[in-house]
Image 1: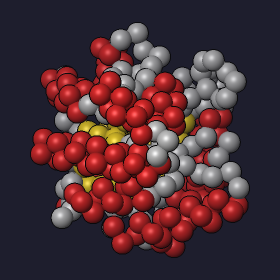
Image 2: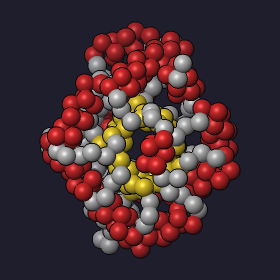
Image 3: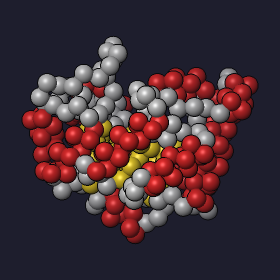
Image 4: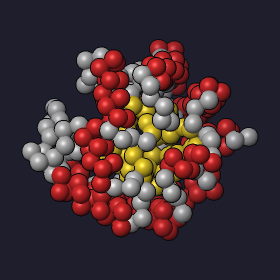
Length: 287
């Protein structure tokens, strides 16, 4: 089922994002995690796509089996990186054959070791081009990425948000945001997009903090900001894993409560393939 159809009958919609592991053993572990979250009845799960398309086959495998064997509605990430248009068509055809109704259309990050994105000579340069191609050729629900603090490569937020408008005009059905830790950033971003006439659902992305050094690395890569008070709190307990996890659950729960009170359509959780924190947060929100 298309995500937008699910959201018509279910608000808020809680969704979870996973990445395809590299080893067969880790794939088995991921499927166990997917079985573990099934009782939460998430609206959908999404599976990311490695830089350069290195995890293409596993992405398709996981979304197909998550839907057909576990009964979780699924969305496959698809990027422009390293693919010609004909290769993109082959992947989309395979998703259709696998019964997948949803895709997350992204430009994608440069492959490891490369400083900037270089489009395939016969491929797509921007997520807006990929979105337009999918919309024209396939009956898929298309999600695109939004950046409350602006994309790290953009000159400024206004430029990035104008680019997002192009993705919406190209045919996006919903926006899922990059992670953020201050709800004010999301509210400002959402207000700006609504003022630009964007009416499709905007789903905030939340990453529960489970490891201090890990979240520092992530935020440096994606350009998200950790509030100074939160960073100070975490620094003081960084060598106590259970305390960090507890703090992360509490903080993310409060974030989500504020977002839900604001009236968001749903919340998308970045799980890092670990479901404990997300499961606890969702249980607290549904009490």
